[in-house]
Image 1 (cartoon, rainbow, N blue to C red):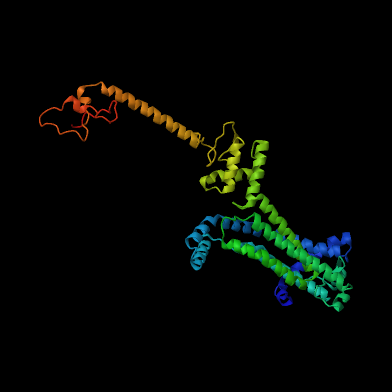
Image 2 (image 1 turned 90 degrees about the vertical axis):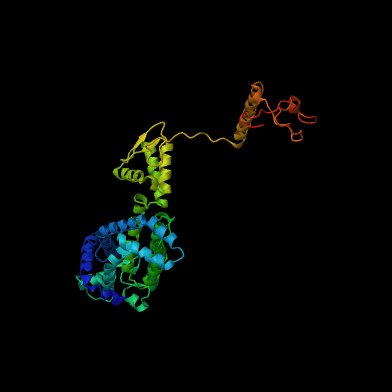
Length: 427
């Protein structure tokens, strides 16, 4: 670790200068040799670094949004090459290259603050050995060696020997208890940050390498912190615990205010937005109006959360407009593509029993009309009253008309009026 930290020795002077400036401020309040003065100086260093990294964090968010926008294309590639993993990976990399998206963008803040982390480690290691570094003179080094956080010197480590800990005027038990608690808190905060990202702010309908990467980081980083944390001075543990808490709070803000489309966090956000609209009968806030405007503009490309939001608005008597506002109407039957066109009223679906009853009535009416037509036709002209002879009747004499008795029904046959023959048929 000391070898790696020495590679960033060029930044130790700025880091030590920042710590000294904060120490002069907090030392006037808590005392120059107290753990509060030196501990708060390290915490303030973290806050300052993270504020400077906000533009990088914004870039990270935009890159993550680009990744989410590519989810449908990624899903199509997965379905097309589901039996060819190598071709699937090649097409994914080509898609990243064509769109300028970096799947490793989530690691940018960690990589950017790594030089400050190792520079602080280098500074604290020299303090533990009683050596001056950067702008820290011998007086400040001695003051820092005496500073303790809950009984553990800021330069002490979990793996330090009893002799080294005694030289810092502390006990091994205090150092190991304090460092163990800090390591556990540091690993737990890192795990919770990644876990809330995976469970709340990821579209789980699409399985992509990005999701696998985030899932892997959720388990790898806490293990790395737990293993390497035993070699970190207490001051470095304070630094890393503070930056983890900052990241966790920053992530919670992003999840609540700018969730990923299709995620559980977006569903919760739209429910809160719906509640606000129904309470105030309007969309309050420019950012909220931009959210409604984006949902309306999607049309048929909306995800399930957004479709439920539009349907719930219609049920409450509101219609979302293209400018992000809503209008109230007692007869709103908005279409799913924006709520502007009225939905055509569909006939009520009949049950099976109702359809059978209607078919029976229609069949009876048809039989009645057929019987009436037969009765009327029997009284028409003689040429329409001619019937076919029975199959067992004798052949007609050639050139003679069959007698009338031949048209009568034979004994045993059904009596009654027969169905008239069509005029165009031949005898």
